[in-house]
Amino acid sequence: MIRNEPITDIEWPMSTEELGFDPNELRAKYRAERDKRLRGDGNQQYLATEGSFSHFVDDPYLEETISREPLFDDSDVIVIGGGFGGMLAAARLQEVGVEKIRIIEKGGDFGGTWYWNRYPGAMCDIESYIYLPLLEEMNYVPKEKYTRAPEILAYSRRIAEHYGLYEHACLQTQVTEVRWDETSARWIVSTDRGDRMTARFVAMSNGPLSKPKLPGIAGIDTYRGHTFHTSRWDYQYTGGDSDGGLEGLRDKKVAIIGTGATSIQCVPHLGETAEALFVFQRTPSSVDVRANRVTDPEWAANLQPGWQQERMDNFNTLVTGGYQKEDMVGDGWTEIYRNLTGILPVDGAEQLSNVEIARLTEIADFQKMEGVRARVDAIVADADTAEALKPYYRQFCKRPCFHDDYLTTFNRPNVSLVDTHGAGVERITEKGVVANGQEYEVDCIIFATGFEVSTGYTRNSGYDVFGRDGLPLSQKWADGPATYHGVHSHGFPNCYFMGMIQSALAANFPHLLNEQSKHIAHTVHQAQQRGADVVEASAEAEQQWCETMRSKARLGMRFFSECTPGYYNVEGNPDDKNGFFSNVYGGGAAEFFSILRDWRDEGELRGLELK
Ligand code: NDP
Image (cartoon, rainbow, N blue to C red; front, top):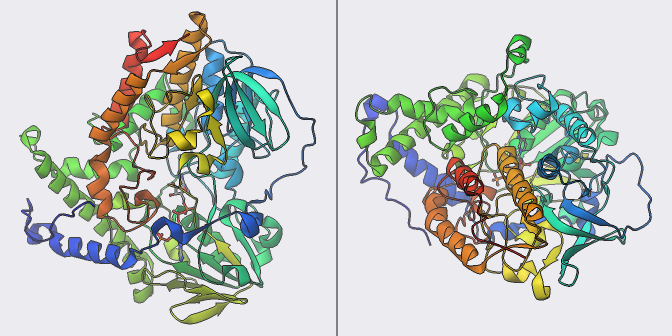
């Protein structure tokens, strides 16, 4: 149990008069808002999209179902996942000369999260110039500062074509088991299509938010109207496309449950055409200015080699609290650190203690969130609706959102915010949704309720991995993951993990995937150069990395324990062993990336055993 700091006996470096708000009052308000949302069932409150709910994950985007014979062939590397991680791994492996790469992907095409998330208004609010991978390699500059989902999906296909990934891809294929064969020193990968493919190496990039979840609301299975999850948008029903124009909803009453980053983007389009839209809110998101703009062609033409990595590093350093002379991206993500710089003393900042810096950071956070709340008042006409839309928690307690049309949507006469004061939807009936004791009859319920997280690695990926002596990964990691550098695990030779398992938290997630891809390519290449069939982390190296993680990883726990519940803090249980952030390197992404880089530069493959 993490003890929270007291609210009142704190010495703030500035007075209430100077600040224009009382930090103690805000702290108390934040805590009260958190407390009213904490619930005993935590992460158990959600339903998996399995069994009688499995139709929620049927693929609505497939043009045709591939029919093929099972495969029993051999590759150098099998990559699981055709999202950015899988594509990056394949690209970096090709760069070091690995040729036979097979990608297995359950979707009908490459793109991962962007294959599935095609809801109206879907776009990425991390700047496109740092988010889209391989821009220099692909000689591509995105059309806008914040790119829209169709461009990302098209770009994913372009990467797959450029690197020849379609040739050996197994699309519409779900891995069911990955098993190490000691005799051949190869992995055997089985799938739901009866494949039994082998490979010397396997790399897994399953995606952290790939399994849609539903709220465990009483009566959810009794509803008779139309319903779907945002990650499987039913355009046949709504009409329109990613740009909106949902003409099918003109005569429909629609409920959307959830107000996270996805809902923020699709609500404006729903509000535009639905006869009536009810937005069911449990916790408001923080919605800041987006200010998208078209890419300046002159700027694009003058980019110098190495520009993308430089820009990614610049952003990453700033959002992990480091210093950079210039803020290249200069948006809402980096703003909190710009604010902090603004309130740090011009002289003597380096002499501040950690506690003093923490206080100043908290003040900068209060200021930022006061701004976000003031924006709601400035935009939303109805005072009660405006009040209900104000987020009372620290900026990074939940995924910050950026949108210029979300709040204005609540000024439309056909749109109603149904705020549940933290309690959530009460019940679903045959006809609609019950909240605050009132039933709302609707033709359609859209679940914008996010994705399953923190339920364990193998459960989330949908298959187990059997290492040396048949040891299941689910068993080895029963008490939490154990890796070396987040990519290797002892007893699982030639096997690479990608994502946030004992690695870094990067606001720009593809940055992490790129660093991991380079690392994987390096070790595979080194193994091949040294004539080794097997590369495996030593038990000692793994133990040391776990020790490093333990000493660093819990740095953010106190912060998350103060936060309103959500998937960032396992619904109020931030110290859960499988928590979204429980296994990230506490020293920050910039430090983590340099650990990997220095290790590669050292050239000794320290901690790995080659056979
Ligand atoms: P989230 O998990 O962020 O949001 C789920 C929403 O459902 C929350 O508002 C939650 O409320 C609500 N909810 C859950 N149960 C109930 C209930 N019983 N009654 C009422 N409401 C309920 O999912 P999203 O799909 O919005 O976003 C997931 C992630 O995807 C984001 O955090 C982000 O990382 C990523 N994303 C990124 C985008 C980008 O621009 N790059 C765009 C969209 C998504 P509560 O908050 O109270 O739990």
